[in-house]
Image (cartoon, rainbow, N blue to C red; front, side, top):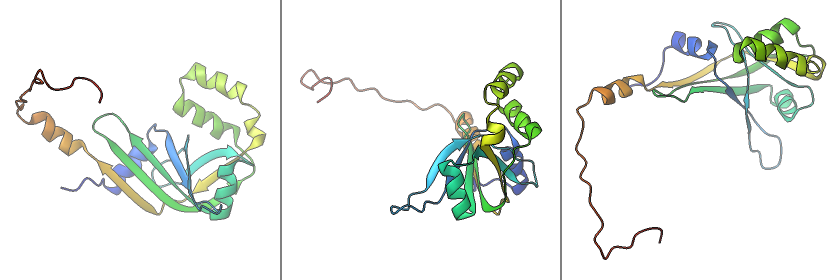
Length: 171
């Protein structure tokens, strides 16, 4: 049984409301990648867009690597995820206020988004806009197995009580 999603299903999922985890290679001696949660935007057939601090570790690593991976997941059952990797096609020094507002409203309720935009207005000049063209897609959708488990007959579990001589509690 394959758990992979179709490309169209991957694109619809990625366009939904999910906090992504951005991963980018490291140039440090240990070579460890940086993986951090981030808001992102995506429209099917388009580019993945993230906003980040101009001088942040993310921005420095993205500039050096010229590519990154973004993974979005649904934690509730049935679990699903989509991971996309690709080259950075633009790092724009400016942040479009309308694009930033759309991102805030994508993740937050209207009143909270409005307050967030006011409280973080300095990000309009402190952030950069990074755009990535998805090339490699990985995905899993465990809906089918979850449906099977829901329709399976219940099983009986035998409970065994400890013998009086068995220790109780942490060893």
